[in-house]
Image (cartoon, rainbow, N blue to C red; front, side, top):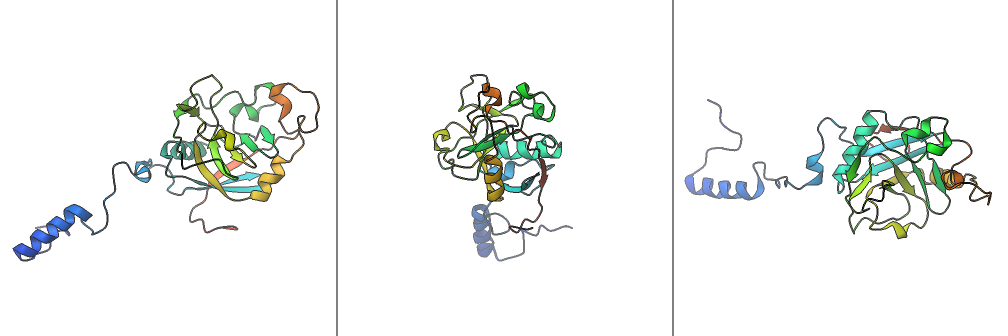
Length: 228
């Protein structure tokens, strides 16, 4: 006969107290996992790590995804698994503001279509008042179709805040932060563009670096800090 590890033999009075404690704390004596715990909603087929490396020709950026925004966290992980980001670019760089990718159109040679599309879907926004646009924040771009910004995010495009982006608070979902690579962020953001060189250009071309900034994205297991 198999006996549950949660049911040792005790005197009735003691057993009653233990059962009551078990109802409050869970079988192992620790707190139960709440149904609304964001971390508990993660797809079991996705990597458990929340740390990801973005490799570029200018160095690597390491980001940490937030459990507080599980929809965006898991979407990012799923796209990395599909190698969706590989070969795409930071097609928009604005010194003192942010750097933005990742449009699948950016891995072709047709400049006018960069920044126009995503993976073919949008995702529900997860905007939180406690997650604001400070330096190094990873956040989701909005679809360019006039939808209510508090309802939908682009399925793939994101940006990393380099300067003052407080004007975007409440409009975009913040879902991660830069852990290392701030000098790389500054290097990419300071690349020459037609806008910062005050050269005439259509809107779609004004903030594109002249040499594409390609990336590859990979999970980092057991991240321990810079150099891991």
